Structures are given as structure tokens and as C-alpha cells.
Image (cartoon, rainbow, N blue to C red):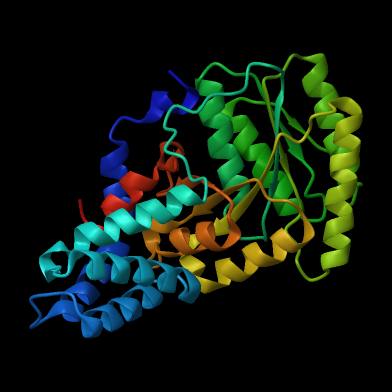
Length: 317
């Protein structure tokens, strides 16, 4: 059983509850979209387009989904409105599959090397440090030795928050004085992890987007010093986004993708918003897999993303 397979109890129940606001909003809009209609026609598709866009799926991704449904309708000649939900689920899941969003509930660490190094990026306030803490908890409870690096040296609150998580989870946090070189913190963290046989290292970074060149140079420097300790590092560059911000999360994703290669996404705060459709749009537009979704405050509410379950919860199984 993989690491996150240990924490899948009641996963679907948590997912359904976490997406309840989005699901209710989508269902209300879908009901209005098909009212008085027995079959899917141009009017229904126009209404469906509006439903998806207003659910923060995004214009480009919405048009892709609509085209797929149009092709299905044209092929099958007659599609009743009662079939629309099932078709919408199928086509959305198919689109996510093309974006490498795997259904891997039992993901585990690679066995060919240790430690597995995750560089975590994202603007302030998206839940970046909390996501690191929750991941550290899940790795620790799977029996892995975890090290955290406080490389957001420009905000005292960020270092303090990471230290609180480290104490809560029971994992060491490597830090330096405020204003220290973030790359130096990353270097020290990896050296400590190497000396102590760590399995996983998570590095927190500064969440600034006001200067793209500065951010790009900083992340490049961090990566370069990491490779001096472990040539393969980082194994993963994870971008954390706040799902409740809807289209603003799209823009943040685009800006980060412009300055560094993103290999995975963690989308947080989906339980408090009706904008859960943003998960579909971001995955489609960035062609980067969504790996984790945050569905509540608890440490077990950070789940591995399962596209089929997500779509079933969003549009009704």
C-alpha cells in the first residue's frame, strides 16, 4: 500500500462534503439550463457553456468540453437532457486524463534514491505552509523520516508557522536568521537530510510575484545549490494555489509557470468555495497534473487527486 493509501478511509465522503458548495451551485445552474427541454440542443449547450464558465472552469476549457459534447450529440443523433450529467462527467474526466492527472490513490516514494525533494512555491496566503505541514504529517505517519526547510526568509510569520507545524508533526525544521539567503537554507536542509538519512524533504519558498525576474533568479539559485547535494533535486516543484480565488488562481499559475517549470499542483481551500471547477481549468490550461486537493482544515483533508472521483462528486455520481 502506498503512503496515501493509508489515509483513504472516508475519502469519498470527505470529497463530497468538500465540494458540496460547488456541486450545489453547478446543479442549480444545470437544472435551469435544461428546464423545459427533453433533448440536448444548441440552446442547452449554450446554457451549459454559461454554467461551466460561471463555475470557474475557464473559457478555453469550457469550449473544449462543449465541443466534445457536441460531437457526442452529433454522433448519437439524439441525447436526452437526462443523459447530460453522465456525458458531462465522462468528457470532463477524459479531458483530465489527457492532462496527466492520474488516479493514483496509493502513490509512493520512488525507490531508486532518497531523499525525495519537493520544492514548494506559491504566493502568500494560498495555504502553502499549511500544505507542507499536512504533507509532512502524512509522510511521517507513513513511517518516513521528514525534513522541512524554511527558505521563505523574508517573512518571520512564514518561518514561525513552519516551525509550529514541525513541532506539531514531530519533524525537524532547518532555518536561519530572517533575511538570510533562501538558497543557503535549502543547502543546509539537504545537508542535514543527507546526514540523517531522511526520506522526504519539503522546502518552503517566498511567495512573491511582483518581480518575475527576481523570483526566477531566486528559484534557479535554490535549485542549483540543491543539485550540489543531490544531483536529482528537486524531484518535484509543487505550485500551491487557493481554489477559492477562482480565476485569480489561473493567473497565479500562469505567472509561476512563466518563471519556473511546475511539475505538480496542490489546490487548497476547495471546501469553502463554489469555485471548484477551477481545478479542471487549471489542469487543462497548464498541462500540469493536479496532485493534491485541500478539502478542510484537518491534516487528513489534504487528498491525492482522483479525477474520476472528483468529477463524480462535482457533477453527481
